[in-house]
Image 1 (tube, rainbow, N blue to C red):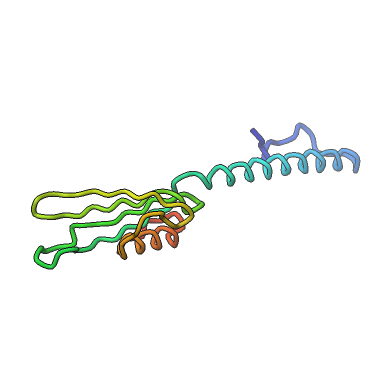
Image 2: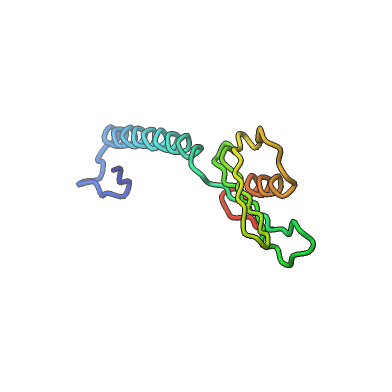
Amino acid sequence: MINFFKKKEKEPENITELLKQFKELKEQVKDISERIKSIEEKSKWMLQKIGIVRFNPFRDMGGNQSFSLAILDGNNTGVVITSLYTKEGNRFYAKAIKEGQSEYPLSQEEKKAIENAINSQGSQSIQ
């Protein structure tokens, strides 16, 4: 682990020692930059965007108890899950999403959930 605040045993006494410390710092900054780049690259594949839309698909039933939930990674790839609530029970549907699109037809609510997730930048977006 790199510790920038670790006190040196002695302060640099001349320009040569000072340049040596700057060189060490430069190497540490380069190492940290490479680590950050690696973490950023890996994080693109982690689920990080969530969007949800509640709705009422049937006029004769009360409440917005149905929903579409989109869960996406940094590349806008993931899944949209829809639950349709009826008097007889719940039905769940899942559709794969790749780069914000699906090979299956999407309902308006599913499209909105995906849009909410894409625009959420890591925070939950509920409508």
